[in-house]
Image (cartoon, rainbow, N blue to C red; front, top):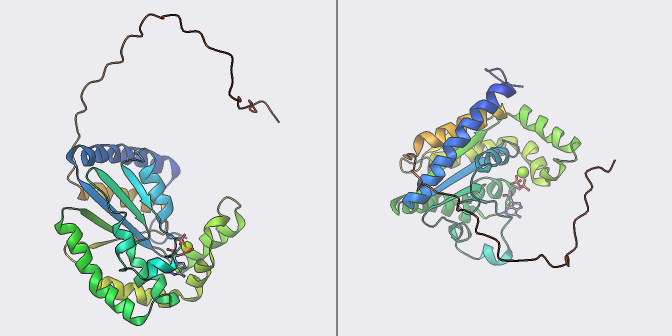
Length: 265
Ligand SMILES: Nc1ncnc2c1ncn2[C@@H]1O[C@H](COP(=O)(O)OP(=O)(O)O)[C@@H](O)[C@H]1O
Ligand SMILES: [Mg+2]
């Protein structure tokens, strides 16, 4: 299953991950205190491990500061807009981090391969995308792009695992199945996309994702290494003394209590 390296064992993985998550908290505080804007794009084939990495990134973060954007397929109305418009709506304001679980790169991947866009729309995308990203970066947005890379055999293994696991079955879509039959078309689409969009202002970083644990650690460590954050001192807080009671009496209960089911079989 894992090429080159042993699968990272759970204990060292968890220890490493927790340390990185502590750094992510510091990074988030820095973004907030300095009013910076950070965009992280998670791309890659179906089942490459984007979603589960995003979960680890956000685990200890503040949902009002760090948002996940995972847009559904565009509506009829959205189809008539400028392609980048519906993504631009989700870009961060000062002090915010936005994680794109798939992004505008859909046009160069699934839309290209599945024929959801015209040749003309596709060509226009390859032309506009680097311009769009340069505008973001020029405006001061920190933009990071990660490509999660998985082999055909491992992708299929993950699809089968999803199929047989009631907790993961929802992740398996008809699009996913097409990504098996159209593996090579996706490969070509990715190669072409990289040629046009791996630009100095916003380079792609490839995450070897055959071992999910390694991928998560390496991606988060790399992201942190590219952000010039430092620990922000928080003003010291003191828990106040509780004032003397002034005679409040609790009225009879009017709301419905949630039953305690914890002793049920
Ligand atoms: N008709 C469509 N037009 C454009 N994009 C689509 C269409 N159908 C699906 N997609 C996109 O294809 C991507 C892959 O689909 P899917 O495998 O269902 O989701 P995901 O892999 O993100 O969990 C999604 O980003 C989805 O929005
Ligand atoms: Mg999918």
